[in-house]
Image (cartoon, one colour):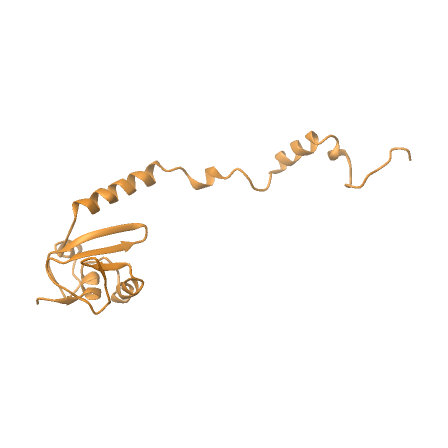
Length: 140
């Protein structure tokens, strides 16, 4: 076997769980072969450079073998070799995510809690003692 469809190779190399998912990602232009946007019917051969995006991660691999069937993970890992630049980029992204702060901690606004509402009422010069926002005269 000298050549194999890219969707079938991506499935056999375990980048995607099904061939349909691989074909969908190819259709969304998230897979490139030798720096060209690929179609699902594009054939790859040993030595081709495949760039694919899986979520926020972009991977670049060199095709080292072809297989028409999906096998165990250790066998699938022998079908490709990840480039050193891709490995370094993944490590940097992983470290960036690890050092990043929790997004919920950045929220400073939103609805006040009951305790915060009481403090706001006390600080707003007597609004907490009134029953309505209308102007009242104390001469009654």
